[in-house]
Length: 193
Image (cartoon, rainbow, N blue to C red; front, side, top):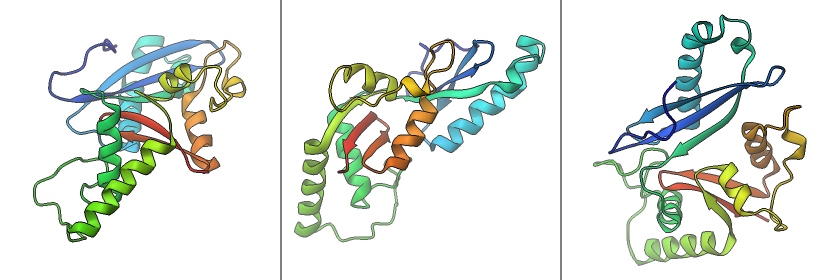
């Protein structure tokens, strides 16, 4: 197992936490990423590593039934303002999602005064609707404890009390009233209602 506190000096990483809910066994790993990449890429990389090592670590008894409980991007640089700016730049098609700045990325819209105004409005909108910020949902929910915006996670706990954050994220996404937006600078949560 890789120490989850270790992140390569010039890049971020995805932290994955697998659990076998019926036995309360837990397995964690960190998948280094040159660029943030997509959640699907990170899930596939963590699952492949988990599958390759599960039979060695537990004799194959419990780990094949393990579920992914948490997949969190650990940015090298954490910044709420940069996260908002990055998301706004993606929304106005100045940056491709999940890859950050790529030299030669085709610009679909001219960067004139109208485009700049749209960018400013998009950033302002995110700032006004911001509910929480952190590395992932566990950080955001901890910061929102006791506030009306906190998502009730009791239904997502297994019988040992661990929260399945991937199920929480999926339900937040399907609710469409709130958006948990992953960026290279952390995750932020905005109200869409």
